[in-house]
Length: 408
Ligand code: SAH
Ligand code: SF4
Image 1 (cartoon, rainbow, N blue to C red):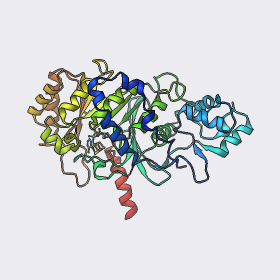
Image 2 (cartoon, protein in one colour; image 1 turned 60 degrees about the vertical axis):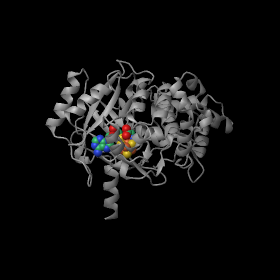
Image 3 (cartoon, protein in one colour; image 1 turned 180 degrees about the horizontal axis):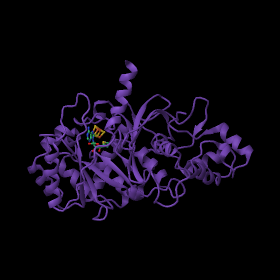
Image 4 (cartoon, rainbow, N blue to C red; image 1 turned 120 degrees about the vertical axis):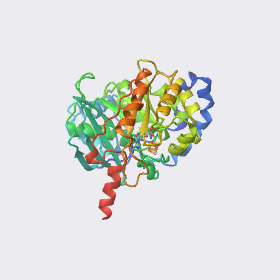
């Protein structure tokens, strides 16, 4: 069943003044810019979280919102705690399965509310175990979600927008213009639907033994341009009485929306990944156009003050290896110099080509030589293994392939 969009996004005036009080002066200077980003983001709000028959979507509501809904229908607010348990710990989608709630109330809830999931357009599993979904929402918009296994654990790569306003030249999503932001329900829904697919309800006890053990916010879209919704979604996912995933198991990747990075660290405290991809502004301006607004020096300054970053919790710098563009030994040395005073690790990503892409993947020798410079300088720099190539696992590709097939 397709889900409706989530609860109303949190409006700027509700944004966590507590966190802002503790910010570094440079971060505070960004406040005005943040408001501008939020106002622009609101233009791409998802549709309301209500079905045509008037029922409201419970997934994506904050605890307090559920409590308020219960009061509004003449029930006690503690029902919110029970519902939370059934929705996010047990993973049920049917009120009739909630055996701590009496039948008449179950029926009353079912008249007013739904517990939805995204619709599944396609689900494919690669020979290497990578599983990929194309999910659809009530307004027929679609996004991709990918599960990347790692022995008995794995990371779910979730999307935050349909398309992207930015247009990084090597990125397939960058060729699709931004249609809209995803709602809280649509973001949390990707994780819940993946858990359905692996039969991983109720929430496994403790952090060990979960197949869906980690989340990387690295799918379609720029998460920090849909901050309110991704923040609310991750807050739900981290809640101890539900999915209960630790912030240490969540990594958010940004192309460098500097004014929002401070907020992300203060409020969510998740691991940060930064899509650097170049070591000088001239090249980064070209391949990550957002660099023209927030150049490398500003971006690295924001990384230096990122709360929670330490040698034990390093910031990941993503570096897509483009043949003859950014993969020279000199650039590897420059990267080492740039990251000198930041608790960093580097993730070298072999460029994943897509039809019509203007780049080639760096040769394995070039990747190895580049990695060696980093390793010699003391950086752990895992080379991301290409996964799921047989199911087009590169960001944005499954969606385009499906649309093309539909047109044909
Ligand atoms: N918008 C965010 C998160 C989504 S992209 C960001 O840019 O960080 C997640 C990662 O995939 C980014 O590091 C991005 O640069 C990288 N990426 C995008 N297209 C790619 C491709 N074709 N091959 C390899 N990596 C790619
Ligand atoms: Fe958007 Fe990230 Fe792709 Fe750049 S790399 S176009 S920011 S999704």
